Each structure stands twice: as structure tokens, then as C-alpha cells.
Amino acid sequence: MITYIIKSENSTDHWPYFNVDKHNVLDLGCGRWYTKDTEELSPIFFSKKANTVVGVDSNPDDIIFYKNETLNDPKFIFIHEVINNADQVRNLLKEHSITALKSDIEGGEIVLLDLTKEDLNNVTQLAIEFHSEELKESFTTKVVEWGFNIDVKASFAQTPDHMGVLFCSKS
Image 1 (cartoon, rainbow, N blue to C red):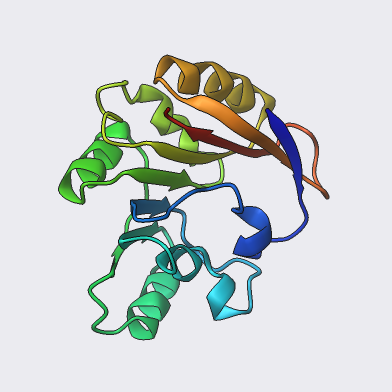
Image 2 (image 1 turned 120 degrees about the vertical axis):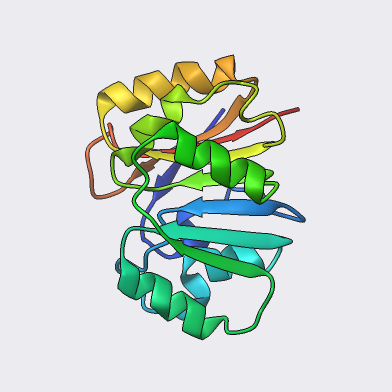
């Protein structure tokens, strides 16, 4: 397993080990945060290689921004929604034939722990940001139960070790 230090919110630095090539990506937490360059925003960044990108965020202004940026581009779907239960994720996975799942929902990723291996049957790539030691440990165990390998464990340069990203894949 590779370890990696994330030094910025720019997608080239934050998500380099998330393989989205020819995938249908579910981007949970696609908000703009501190990223100024549009090309570095996660849904735009992923779209360079992905088939489709479904961006979901709790911030309505960010969803409006993305819809305006990608006007009439069928590669994108943007949804304003607060993710607070696993059924929402199950529905998004099924409805959009998702094969790659990225989650960065500031602690809300805990709902993913209620997903089953069957729910993630079609998903072959995962990038899950964790925001506590408990979530880090839970996801480290859960992704293996789901049938994924942990390829990279990343942590943030400016935060405690209990915050980071697991990049996982199915063989």
C-alpha cells in the first residue's frame, strides 16, 4: 500500500489515485471549497477521463455554478442534496450506473458504512475521505469486506493523521 500526503484542495493533488478512466463517477461532496481554478474542481477534473460525472453537494450555490459551467453538456448531472442515509446513495448508484464513487462529505461519509457489498457490485473504484479516527478504522475494515483493495492511504499535510483519503479498487 502506498502512503501519500495531500497538500492542497486542487484535484490534481487531492485525487491523483482515483482512477475514473471510462467510469461513471458519483462525486459526493463536489463543492468548490478553496479551489479557485475551475479545471481543478473535482467534477470538472474527473470529466476529463470519465464517461459521466454525477455531482452531489449540499451547497445550492455550488450546484448552480456547476450547472452554468457545464450548460448542455450531457456528461454532467448536478444534484443539490444533503446525503444523510445510505438509501440516497443506493438510489444514486443504481439510477446512474455508477462504477466509481468519490465521497468527501465532511463526516457525512459515515452513511456509506450502511452499504452492502451488493450495493457496490458495479463499483470498482472508491475514494473515501475520512474525518475521524473512528471513520478511518471503520472504512479500513469495511472496504475490504466490500471486496476492495486499499491501494493508497493518504493524509493531509496540514491536519491530524485521522483525516485523509482511502483510494481503493477491485481486482
